[in-house]
Image (cartoon, rainbow, N blue to C red):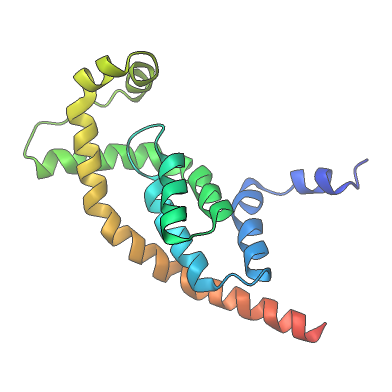
Length: 170
């Protein structure tokens, strides 16, 4: 059944399935480009929070508090996994610089294992590293959110306009 919709959808590239298609769907359902841009901005900043295992709950909370679109915010959370580790390293190093301390220990696999199996040991061994990551993220997030908002708002407005023209032509 190569012509079935589920089979056809599975052939779409990852980015299209998890990012583009949900955005287009929301635009066609009347969600404003500004609200989607805000969801992308806040969702991506929240998805990059440097503590493993917290981003899904933080995205849900941000979505509820700010009345953001949950499917989009969770899609962004999934897509951001590709840049999470490099930005984790950057946030920790920024925290190191801001606190004038030596470079923190950043053994990500060991940190993940300790967090999963021995949370108390994780905080004892990597607590300062985690705080430096949170500090670095907290400094970057207020710049990240407006940057992503303004970078995405224009293209989303253009896409909404194209969708409106197609509907009017039909």
